[in-house]
Length: 251
Image (cartoon, rainbow, N blue to C red; front, side):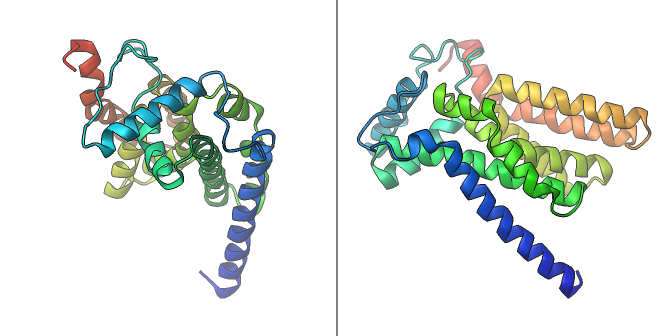
């Protein structure tokens, strides 16, 4: 990369980070200055954050907590709240020892990572500078903020963080397959399934239709399309350790 282009890249990267942080704080402005001595009052947050505290206490005692499929979960095969979001919040809770602060950091951090993913995707696939606008459009999107802060749908947090990065890696894989891209696609899809299975299904289905459109336009080879689809299928197999538990009830 020429020195001038490298300098412009660093400048845009710094601006992207600054804009992402500002947007994340603006998005949680109603909650930002609330006392950390309170408990998150979002619709689903109280039950889920209580589970974070419980699981944290059990792990510190040396116990791997049962997944207790019928406590604020529904059946394991149909529940939305799979393990990943809880286990991501437990280290934050250990560091802060405060459930409200844990909720704030987790929710804002997920949207911030997703915002940077949108910038990266835009920079590589569209062009310079437009990704900065993409950060604004993504990080301040009402549906994301409502789900995170009003509904308290914590399981979708990792989805927001992963989705732009997954789209970037999948498109790169379909264009020029490599082992690293295959592993990256499989890993990100696996994490999405372990975050929110239904949402992961919808995201992957949308990506499949987009790639199929490129196949029809002869921008993507059928072989590479099938290779990308195999990543998604393999991710479903990898996450069977969770789904089969619910199907067999052998928890």
